[in-house]
Length: 610
Image (tube, rainbow, N blue to C red):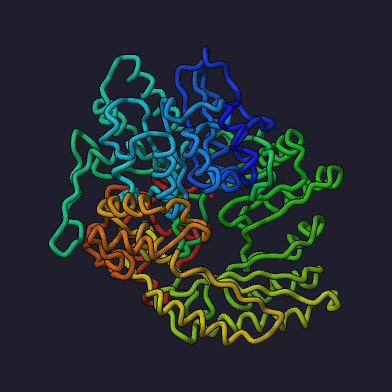
C-alpha cells in the first residue's frame, strides 16, 4: 500500500472504500498482462459496487487472457481533498497503481448527473480532459451505459462510446486496441477502425453544425464513420457471461446481495421510460439457468438475500416456477428472495405467498399517474382496480407497508391528475381497512413523486419539461391534498431534475458548460451534499448558454436531435407514432399481446424472443 494512502485513511469517512482486497477481487501477475483496463464508475464505491452491469463487464474483461481489469470509483470529498493535498493520483483498487498508467480508462455512465464526476476523475488521474489533448493510443478513454445514448455533452472528453450491451463489443474493442499498439498505429487510424465495429460511436469523427436559432442543422460523419450507430445487444442470455463469483464488498453497499438478472428488455411500452426502449427487445434467461446461478452465487458469496432483477420482474413468464424451484434451497440456507419491480396488474396471491416465505418487507408499485386518463397517455396499462386488488392481496397476506411511485409534470397533466394521486393513496388506505389480516400493526403508505424528465429515444423526446416553478406548485397542491398521518409524501428535488433534463437533451455546446461548472467545484452532482444549481447557473451565464433551450423547449417532428447519429434499434417513426397516440390518449398493447413493429426485433434476426 502506498504510504500516502496509509497516512490518509485514518482521516476519511469509510476508509474501506479505498483499500480493495475484497473476496473474489481479481489479481493478476503483471508479467502475464499486456492490456490493463481501469474500469471507472463516476460515483462512490457503494453505488458502483451495486451495479450489476459493472460486475458483468468486470468478469468479461478479466476472463480475457492478457487483460487485467481493475475497479476505480469516485472518492468522496474528504478523500479527494486528502489525495490532492498529498499529490496522490487516482488509483485502481486491485493494484493501487495510478489510473494514468493504464492502457484503457473505461467509464460506466448510467446517469447524466455523473458527467462532472467523469471530468473530476480524469483530472485526479492526471489525464488531460479533452480527447484532442490526448494524442496517443494510451490512455484511451471510453464510456458506455444508458446515459451514453446521448453522449454529446461529453463528446469533447471521450474518445469512444460503446452503445448498448458490452459483453461482445468490449472484447472486440480491446483486441483492436491491442492490435493497434502492436502494429504501431496512430490514434486517428485506430479511431477510424474502431468506428467500423458495430455499436461503437467515435464523437471526433462527426461534424455538427447549427442553425441560427440554435437547433442542429446537420451531423456529418467523416472517414467512413457510419451515419447511424446501432447499439449492440446479447442475443442469447443463456450463452452470455454471468458473474456467479462476484466480489464481496468489505463495507456496506446499496445492493449488498446477489443480483440475479432474469431477462433484459421490457414487454411494456411506457412512453416516458428510456430503459424500456433502449433495452428492447426482451430476451429471457432460462429458468433452470437462473436457478443454477442463484445457487452458485449464494454458495460462493455467503449472501442470504437474492434480488430477482429486471426492468419488470413480475413479467418473467416462469417466475412462480423459479421461486418454487428455489424454495428448498432458500429454506435450508435462510435465503430471502426479493422482487424490486412489481407490476400492479400481475401481482397474484401465488406470487405473494412465495415472497411471504421470506421477510415481509414493504411492497412497491409504480402507478406513475393519478388518473386513468393520464395513465393511458403514458401507456402505463395499469388500472386503479389492478392496483387496489394487488394491495388487498398484499394486506391480506400480512404486508403493512406499500410504497407508491408517481411522476409530476407528465405530458398533458392537469391539476385533476395531480389531485388524483392523493385519491389513489386514500383508496389504498381504504383497501387496507377492508383486507388487512392484522390491523393492530397499522399501515404505512408512502407516496413519492419525481419530476418528469423527457429523455432521448423515448416517445416523449419531443416534449418540454415543465418549469421548476410549475413543478413546485404541483408539489404544493399535492402536499396539501394529502392530509392523513398514515400517508407519507416524499418528492424529488426540482433543481436536480431540471439539470438532468438539460444534460439529457443537450448537444456538444454543453461541453464547455460542463467544464466550466467542474472548474467551479461541480463533481458529485448526483449527491445533494455537493449539488449546487447556482454554480451551474453561473457556468451557463459565463458560457452564454441558455439551459431553458434544452429543458423547456418543445421539439418539432423534423428537428434533427443532437443524438440523431445513435440508434437504439427502435425507429423514429415508431416513437413519433407513440407520441401521437399519447396525445390522443390511445394505448398500445404489450409486446407479448401484439408486435407493434418498433423495429427492435431486427436486432435478434427478425423476431422477438418473448
